[in-house]
Length: 261
Image 1 (spheres, rainbow, N blue to C red):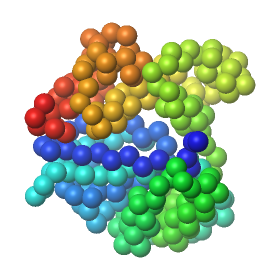
Image 2 (image 1 turned 90 degrees about the vertical axis):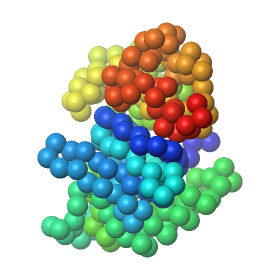
Image 3 (image 1 turned 135 degrees about the vertical axis):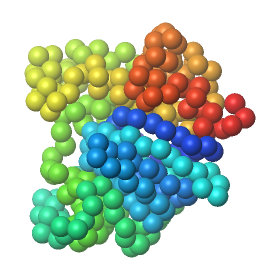
């Protein structure tokens, strides 16, 4: 069953610097231990365990995960349902000019996220998951933060396609087959993605490379097997694409997670 919420953990035993990491679904990143340093065009921001990182769909971040008095650990809460327009309007009305674009400090929301992280989603119905997410969205709206994660109550085509691709990133996923799944022609899919500033092949590559990050967080994989699990038949091509995207090789990334490899 496809959950309304996905929770992924990311850790680092040593400094872990990544660039151009795309977050495909509306998400909140919770820092559990250590610091996350975001690098922007004009300034850098350091997020601590008291801070939450807010990300709309298809946002891209360059950052360093910094261990401090132990490993770095974060949780990424990715949302696969949308709030109501009433919630978004409430959020916009509660916006403060002093609020940061990407970060939020709020203990009540931290506690709700901790509760969500403790649930076994496999034992919860879609209706129950939806109920909990609507409660979280209401909290965010009252805090004036919900519309920073959801600029619109309607999912973009790039978000929906990325979510579909992420369900099986190792499959071939030809443009024609994906267009057929969404009941549109190849030309229409290309046009809709172009209107949102995306190209299909880049979107597929982003999904596959993000999948590689998640796989390496769970297990140390041989390079060729990892490439295959992410839809690449050539380990060399996969390694080159990974480094071009994130700024380090898969081997270098795995070393930041487990220094024994």
